[in-house]
Image (cartoon, helix red, strand yellow):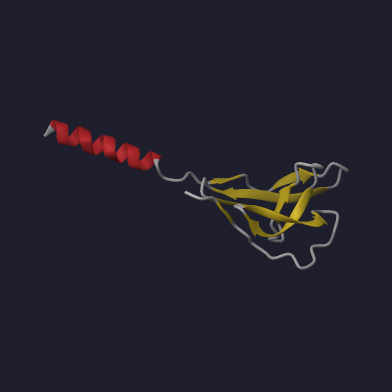
Length: 104
């Protein structure tokens, strides 16, 4: 009986640790390299996430120049970025609420 109880506890512990952990940065200020700021958040888990502005537009940082750009889609499990900088350019033809899903 003790062994059964210990096995159930161990299995339950492993099952819990295998679940995705939700995170949410809450609304915070992001700063562009030129000093302009905007409000956004990152939320999700290990399997899907999104960066969103307060208006619901997806964005991500371009590692080449350090600017945050609006996303126009998802390609290869990453945001496909537009040429429009968040907080600087007007979000024209930008879809809302894109989610990036990572392969399991």
